[in-house]
Amino acid sequence: MKLRVDYKASLRLVGTVLKYLAAPLCFPLVVALYYGESVIPFVVTMAITVLVGMGLERLAEEPDIGAREGFLMVASTWFAVTLVGAIPFLIEAHGVPFVMPALHPDSTLGNPVNALFETMSGFTTTGATVLGDISFESHTRSIMMWRQLTQWLGGMGIVVLAVAILPELSVGGAQLMDAEAPGPGIEKLTPRIAETARALWGAYLGLTVLEIVLLYGLHVTGNAPNMDVYNAIAHGLTTMPTGGFSPEARSIEAFSAAAQWVIIPFMVAAGTNFALFWHVLTGDPKRLVRDTEFKSYLGVIGVISAILAGVLFLGGGLVSAAPIGETFDQSYLDSIQLAIVGHIEPSLRQSTFQVVSIVTTTGYASMDFNAWSSTTQYGLLFAMFIGGSAGSTGGAIKIVRWYVIVKSLRRELFTTAHPEAIRPVRLAGRAVDERAIRGIYAFTLLYLVLFFVSTGLLHLDAVRTGLELSVLETMSAVAATLGNVGPGFGTVGPMGSYLDFSNSSKLWMVLLMWMGRLEILPVFVLFTPEYWRR
Image (tube, rainbow, N blue to C red; front, side):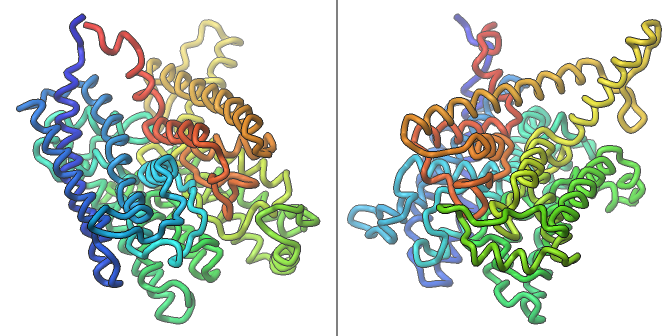
């Protein structure tokens, strides 16, 4: 059987991306030099990624990329960079024979499955972790910074970055960006797709730098004592990609209220279609306030935040007592009850921070929301399915899809009562193509089916291994990995981890994170016979 896909052309471009992955590895290498740590984990990884990349580049001379090759290249690239990105974690735990001893032999990332999970969680900007101890006693500062950097590289998209800076990927760049970009499609901002990629990454870089400056400014002025330059850079690298990794075990709870308020608008910006920022910067600021998806996005965040703020203010949003074995104790619960109940600013800040963090799929935590009541937790679970805007760095289903679904359902009700009527679904004044509507329904249905099937599989595996998980915990673990959110509830809550899951469950969640980041369909299509046949 003759294949319809030029897989050698796809793998050749995977090699190009891998080869240049050595460049960002220089950043944690510099961090290692600054703190007097070993650079071996990064030097070895750089050598491997360059050699493997050059080997793959030899498969084809001048690759011709179509839609099929684009799907294969993007899906393969994300898995390839994850495999390579896990190497520094493994070297830190095991060392290199005859070159370097193990730096932290007790690291949970010494398990290859855990290293793969952590790296996939990083590049897909999920933020779920299997680190047993998040501290500089258990991991070097350079390794922790590499963990942060994986999220920043994955946020706007590794392939989009490659299209922006590598001339050999600009041909066929539209197919590659369309296969990788989060949401129903990517808006072409300039005549050349490489210029569009550079515009998106320019906005992304600019907002990242601005946040780092503001966070460190709070530290300098005494408003955020713990937000030193390391933490400012670390959190700047994981806010804009809606990643959620933090070198602090308590996430953003470790920082002042001022730092939390500064991070909120950057999370909101990260969940916004980055094309809108380009329009604002090029002299069309009204485009932002006219955009239907953006207004819906802010409306959803505002309504859910206001409801949960009211519940927390009145005292109904927290549990009455700390259960045994939870990630918080009674003294913690008493302290947050005193700080939040009956107080406007803390109630508003905690609800807004957590809702924005979950809706945008950032995954930061300003408190341990395991201490929230089941009603408020189900509110957050609902928010996990909403997602940010198309063209943002957020995950989950996305606001624009929900908007089109609601409008198409209203149209069905109208045309049922008026069979002779012709009423197109409109978005921003333009009729939405019927094929696009069918695609949105197909994606959403597939997303929900995958969610329920995965919930069943993980729960059965937990029973098999003796891991005690409630249905809510299992559902939140699946929703948090498939939607690239990060934390769930209970053992996988914001101050917990996914470490207790079996290797088989963790490998399944690695696949969920991969599929969720690439919007499911580009991955599923690879496993259909029609994709490969002529």
